[in-house]
Image (cartoon, rainbow, N blue to C red):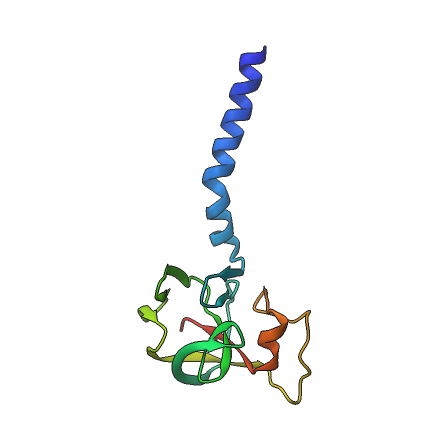
Length: 143
């Protein structure tokens, strides 16, 4: 009886270990990745997006990764592939690092001074750290 129970527990744990990461990808969950250089905000999967062009050089903005003084919530599917130097695998762009120039699609959802800095801002499913809300925040997509 005990052996069967442990086999069930082991099988369940194995399924959870394999399905957990796939469930995050499939459901399109947002991610907040803390690295030594900056916090990287990644959007949940969306079927739509604003279409403004957001050009810029990748930099740290208020402790978050952004472009040209604007915090960016990076498109779903963005991965941090290295943290020295901070390097992303960005859908539609390949690998990019601090100092690289990019052209993103999206739009602004938080623009100080009209919008007050706040500690409860969620953009694209990702909670934005309060220090980052002192800057404009853009939601981007991979189109």
